[in-house]
Amino acid sequence: MTNHALPSYLNSEDLGPWGQYLKQIDRVTPHLGSLSRWVETLKRPKRILVVDVPIERDDGSIAHYEGYRVQHNMSRGPGKGGVRFHQDVTLSEVMALSAWMTVKNAAVNVPYGGAKGGIRVDPKTLSKGELQRLTRRYTSEISLIIGPTKDIPAPDVNTNEQVMAWMMDSYAMIEGNLSTGVVTGKPISMGGSLGRREATGRGVFVTGREAAAKRGVAIQGARIAIQGFGNVGGIAANMFAEAGSKIIAVQDHTGTVVHQGGLNVAELHKHVAETGGVAGFPGAEATQDRDSFWGIESDILVPAALEQQITAKNAGQIRTKIILEGANGPTTPEADDILNDKDILIVPDVLCNAGGVTVSYFEWVQDFSSFFWSEEEINARLTRIMQDAFNSVWEVAAEKKVSLRTATFILACSRVLAAREVRGLYP
Ligand SMILES: NC(=O)c1ccc[n+]([C@@H]2O[C@H](COP(=O)([O-])OP(=O)(O)OC[C@H]3O[C@@H](n4cnc5c(N)ncnc54)[C@H](O)[C@@H]3O)[C@@H](O)[C@H]2O)c1
Image (cartoon, rainbow, N blue to C red):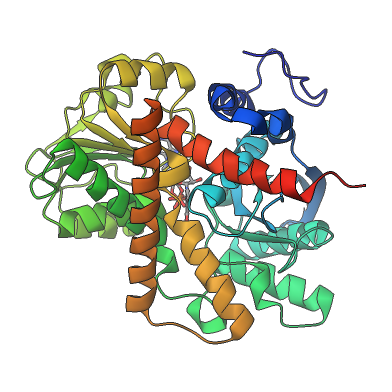
């Protein structure tokens, strides 16, 4: 890796997901032409806020949690990116996720910079009241830097419409106005957008359909394996099943279920709602241990859980034709090389899962005008944006003879750095 002037606040021996992102930037730099003069901008987040989030627990004790909001780049517009509640959240992870948002927003050409937030907490250990207090205190701590024209959070792992409603309400109380545009992914009853909940999964499906057409894989009857059965993986499963594909394997944090004839996706959703995970699903013909999931032969593999899941250790086992990165950062650069050598087509996260932020953008626009669109209109606009972005990336990849990931980074980083150049440095 190039010797980046590494920040003193990360462990230079183990940079975590931020190191993965820096390697991706190294790969795109030779393709940036004269804009490479500005590339250091992409290797340093613009602003990082670390906050202490204290709450009173139901038993009367006081608990403290670590919270973050990172604004990676705002050359093209206000910050935009989700908030993650997870016990393994680190600064490196939030930095990488914020940077991938910069790239993603530029790749689909929505007028946002990149940001991300998180709290280092396992929300399953909190009551609903504790979760609400945590969310409200976190929002007040980061209210210094968020706002409808500054930085707009959204849901990510373990956060949902309810969490967004609490965030909006807390911000509105602090500001003394309604401020619906401060977060997206809100409930429909308070300024949310139709189609937002399904948007990321729908985008995964749309880019998957485009990739399948390029590779000559028929969606009808395609065998799909999915890791993660939450918002992204669960909705993508529905859409592929509706299109006639067979969901042959699903893995989540509780286990792996397999059915070569195709799992009944509606029944699996019911089972997850009742039990909290896919483990023990009676409609599976087999279960697998965690690692052998990657060896299941499929036509399309969808990692839709967490980052750094496909590594040099398991990439060799993977037997599929197309990988759709629903999750952010699921593939390490070393695994990327192994998969590219095996001629597996990877639709990268920064393109594949951009459907969520695209409909978040629609939600924000609708909130500003207080005029709401129909679901058909939203889905049609989303589909068009995802198809256009996929095809633009495909052309760059063909022209430069690079992977879809590098092509997406070329397109996106050029847009970000061109904005930086034309704005110039302040003062
Ligand atoms: N929600 C969005 O709109 C959106 C948009 C873009 C990208 N993403 C990314 O998609 C991924 C999933 O997000 P989500 O919103 O669906 O979250 P979610 O909380 O709804 O679901 C997460 C899923 O991952 C599973 N999981 C967690 N740890 C696992 C493990 N160790 N092994 C296997 N499965 C595991 C969980 O069981 C769950 O099924 C994340 O990387 C997120 O950043 C989400």
